[in-house]
Image (tube, rainbow, N blue to C red; front, top):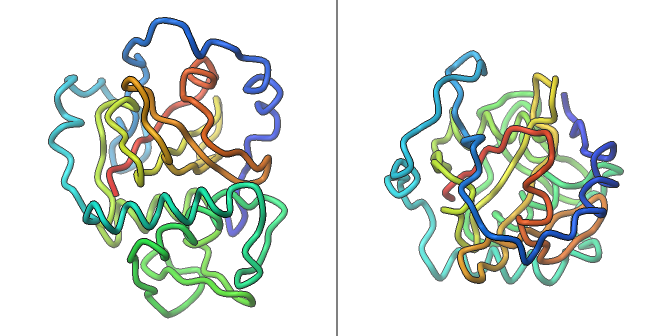
Length: 208
């Protein structure tokens, strides 16, 4: 599971969507609505997202955004580059924002680290990142709606029929209530969520 099960099959759909100006509505697929086994459960009430615990300070989240904005279209030579690079990129941004390395066995979901030569599975794999951030370290908490994301927060999704996470993105802007996402693999800066919300995926929004 070391590498992301990427979203390449849906990228063409993402690029074809041009709904930025459409009316914003709450996504019916509630991000993070899963039990410990990963099975979907009933949606959360709309206000649950507002109860998510803040993890990084505003100044640290600004550092996350600054890093992601700087490197969204290119690659930092200080880190290893992957063909499917989305989670690796987001981990770099979170490290720049103040997340600390947790050294140890690279396959462990309780460890998290990366540099130009080595990365833990949690650093570079979408599913393992989720397990570390939400379950092991508690560095991230669940938001009840994608629209509760603020700059510095993270959005992931599972493609339809997939057991594991498929893609990881970081929120780098918010305009008129719409989060804008930046990510690697198909290197993208500030793509509005309204241009991807119709994808047949399950969203997992994380307060960082």
